[in-house]
Length: 399
Image 1 (tube, rainbow, N blue to C red):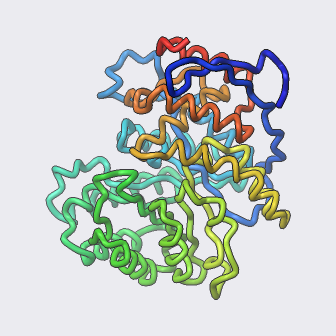
Image 2: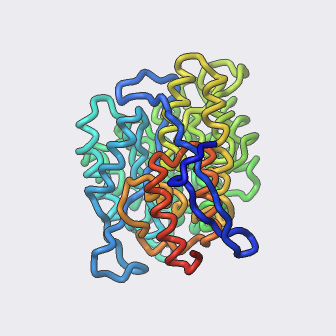
Image 3: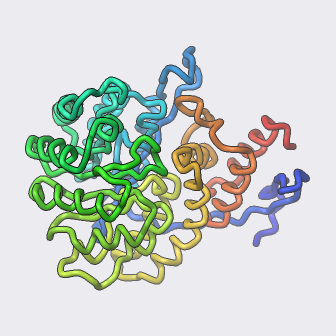
């Protein structure tokens, strides 16, 4: 613990009284570079930066600071991470509509050209079709096709996101099989499937035609097996490591498991020795938490590529409590913590979000995030973090 008085702040405790807190020095992460050869494919689902100066109704309209938003993608690519664009971390369906998402995808595709070999995959959904307006699975197919065509025309690769409209109109597994078979057959390149649990989006309850995960798994695996040449992998966001591992061990050779488990990512990425092929022995990553812990994620993946599993685990271990706080229930509001971290670290000049989502978490939630981020060495500019935390406390009358 350091003794610098400039790294101290008073934070409110559970009883409402403020107590002194001294920050540690930030970790000096030995991060990967844009050209690093890593042994795991790792995408960070990236957040968007709102434009707080736009004269709009924030709960109804969307205004994005495109320059700051794309600058953050460049930051991720420089760390050797891929970018999963226009996903739920970018507030897709929680402030970002399809026209804004397509504009974001086009801008990211253009920016990725600055980084030869950069990984970029873009979320393809059906969000231009309101669930209440969907009448049949054919409506869902047409909505998916519209977005596939637009993303591929922009030069993007596809993450096939779960569809609220499909969850509403599907009558059973056969409807999911029909939709996914149709879209996968048309895709230009292999896609990543995204299975998003209802803790992230309650409208997706019963996805794959069943509320029983064991039955849902069989449907998802059936779709993958029938279309293996068109499936790069599947991202599972169920926050259940046992289900993810069980599915991983049954994937066809060459089809990747992209963990979306923001609670258990460290051990899932590290993997085990069980499975007939390499893709069954570990998970790759497509994680929202990698946005918030990008330097640590980059350094850990580099250590793993250097066969230093102990260092990999040491780096990521203190990030797990932070991630569990960010993704605590109601999990769908995790984006607020992700943007809070970006603000504390100087990646954006304000703590304002699309859709006014900065109000989705309490002050005490942010106080705990501040402490946990410090414990993980992730307040990379501690003086700035203190200054900004003080401004948040003052805004809430907690000085």
